[in-house]
View 1 (cartoon, rainbow, N blue to C red):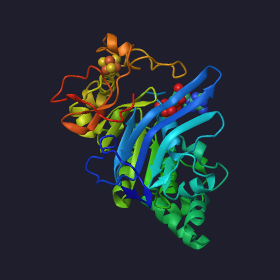
View 2: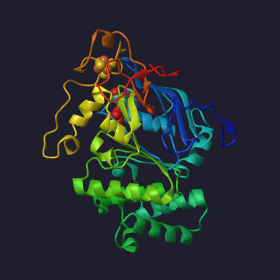
View 3: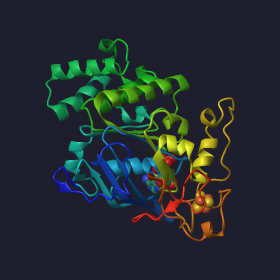
Length: 359
Ligand SMILES: Nc1ncnc2c1ncn2[C@@H]1O[C@H](COP(=O)(O)OP(=O)(O)O)[C@@H](O)[C@H]1O
Ligand code: SF4
Ligand SMILES: [Mg+2]
C-alpha cells in the first residue's frame, strides 16, 4: 500500500482497522521504549503494534504504571533522547516518526498531531495570557497575522464552551477553574485542526460532571473536525461510550484490543475482565465501591517470564508462568486480538495463529 508517497507494508491481520477503510492514519509497529535506570533497563513500552483509522477513536486503558503515558509520548516522539532507547516504527500519514529529525517533528506537533495532557497547569505557561498561548500556535503554523489569530482564538474559545471569550482571552491560567483550563488546552490542541489528537487522562482530577462535559466536548470536536483521537485513561468507563475500539495495556504491552462492544460483550482476557469489574458504572451501576484487582502490576525493571499477569490471574495455569502468550486474533473476528493461554469462555473465541504476533 502506498501512503503519503511512502510504501507502507501493511499486514491487515496485525493491524486491523475495523470499519475505517483500508488506509490507516497511524501505524505503530513493534514499538519498544526502554529507560536506562540505576536498577537496569525498564521496558515501559514492550512491543506495541496497532493502527488507527482516520476519524477513529481508540481508547487505551490500563492501571497506573502500565505504560500508557510513555506509549503516548513515544508515538509523538516527545521523550527526551537521553537514557531512553526507542525501537520500532510509528508511521503517521505515511511518515516515519521514530528517529525523524527534530525540525520535522516540530512541524508536525501542534499542526498535524496535538496532545492534551492530564495537568493543564503544567502544560500552560503561567505568566502568559491564554489568548497569546493560543495565537502563538496559530501564527507559527498557519501564518496568520495578529488580528486574524486573535479572531480565531476567540472563535476557538467559544467552540470549547468558554463563556465571554473576549474577557477570558486576557486571563492568566491561574485565574481559570481546572475545567476551564482543560478547555483552553483543548482549544490550543485544536487550533491548527490536527489530524490526530492524543489525550492522556485529560479529565483525571476534575469533578465527575466537568469530566463528562470535557469528554463529550472532545467527542463533539472529533466528529466536527474529522480527526482521529487516542483517548488514554485508567478508567474504562471513560471510553465505554466514546471509543470505537479499546486497547488494554498491561506491563508495557497491549494484551487485548477489539471494537468497544466486543471488549465489553465478549471479553477474552482475565485482566480486561478484572478492569471491567473494577468499573462500577459499567458492571453494576448501584455498586459504588471500586473492586480492586488483587496485587500490583509487575516491576518493569525486572525481566518477566511468562504472562505478566500470571501472579494476579484467577485463570492462571502452569504454562502461564513459563511462556508469554502471543497476541493472536479470535477466529470469528480478526480485529479482536488478545494475549492469553486460557481466554474466558465466550462465543466462538477460538485462538487462531497470527503471523507477526508479538510475544
Ligand atoms: N522518565 C522515566 N524514567 C524511568 N522510568 C520511567 C520514566 N517515565 C515512566 N517510567 C516508568 O515507565 C512505566 C510506565 O509509566 P507510565 O507510562 O507513566 O504509566 P501510566 O501512564 O500507564 O500510568 C512505569 O514503571 C514508570 O515508572
Ligand atoms: S495467559 Fe494465563 S496468566 Fe495470563 S491472563 Fe491468560 S490465563 Fe491469566
Ligand atoms: Mg499516565
